[in-house]
Amino acid sequence: MTEQVQLKEEFVPLKSRIWVSIADASCAMLNTFVVSIGLTYYFTSFRGLDASLAATVWLLFGIWNAVNDPLFGFISDRTKNKLGRRIPYIRFGAPIIGLAFILCWINFGGVNASQAVMFIQMTLLLFLFDVLYTAIATSIYVMPFEMAISNKARSGIFIWKLIFSVFPLAVPLVLWGFIKPEPGSNAFTFQLIMTGFGVVMAALIFFSTFFYKEKHYQQAEDQLPFLKSIKECFTNRSFIVFEVLSFTIIYVQTSLMLGLNYYLAEFDLPAVPLYASLGVGIVGGVFLFVKLRERLGVKGCTLLMAAVFSLGCFGVLAFGHTLIPTMLGFFCFGIGFAGGMYLIPLMNGDVVDMDEHRTGLRREGMYAGVNSFITKPAISLANSAFLWFLNLYGYNFAGMTGTQSSRAETGILLGWVLIPGILLAISFAALFLYPLAGKQWEEIKHQLAVGHAEKEKRLLEAQGIRYQE
Image 1 (spheres, rainbow, N blue to C red):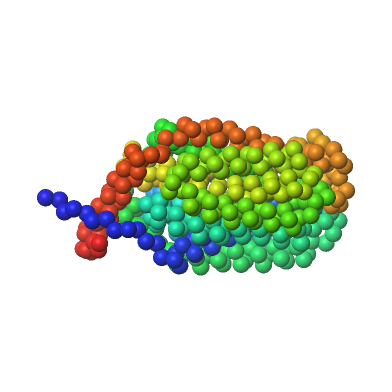
Image 2: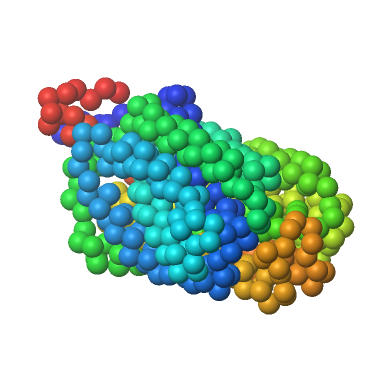
């Protein structure tokens, strides 16, 4: 008779939860500076690259991700290393991404570099940075699913990641406001600060890998061939619905972070109460969704998040020149940011769990890669769409802060929040088709937990190690 496997409650050590969150925040801060806030401004407004060429870079970047991300997900799922499937990419990729980040702010060709030189530099460094970011961020993103299976245990990790996510939201925005080089100024101090920032973030990512570990039994599983692996993702109905929301959240976060500095620079509203409203929304959103997750489930909480986030965007679009309504809009942004960073990973974990229920394999890397294949174009589209609105409404890229016309201000507002509001409304409607909720789904999750315990027990016994309950 087969011995009954007794389940123990999953527990992830505090130091592991904190350090994986530090790594996630550090990687996100590097990416926020390059993708969401700094690179477009630095090359267009400061260095003088034509906006249409910069938009072309972002479109090429989106095409590149069609190959880059699914391929890495496939490779990482098949990685067999004593450190695990993900940690090697995080540890050894950290110093290189720090170097790539630093090179983004070096003026190759000098202050009088040609349009061609700037276009090539922006393209190559963006591509290089993204290859490294894909390897590291994807590995960090799926680490909670390598570390735990239950939503309760994963939630403990995501709460810490959410706490640390304040840094990628606040630090780049605040720091950029102080160090942003104005057109025609000397960029040496800015470049020195960015160099130091890149070194510190890379070091944090590197050292974090000594404080968390993976469940190695998943390396013993055989994986599907590449094309079949991709096909299986798209036959998972929950994944299709999830991707609508995932694409939207990436687009919205990119657009809001990119447009915020342009908005604050040109609209005559005090930044402190707006930042305070955003912060209160983030903190309130954390407590709200953690408290409601058990009662409403991940699906119910995500519906609430999408509705509030969308209303915030349309509120700012309509009343963006008035302080109190804009503060309410920023409060809604904070709730949306909190929900996106806490709920989306939980939903992603459920989607991968359903795939395991269907295929018998753990394929977090492949799902993360295909997810990036779909959502990374959102980053390119958000940057390109924002630049398109600025061009359409006559924004002066060479102008000093606070000198844009009222028409250009309208372009900033439309490029900033119109499309995000529409996409969030669409996501709200799509979530009603999401199937992973209710008692039947909870029973499937329980069966998966039993299966994981059995797999780990068999692997340990094959190595002569007794399974400890």
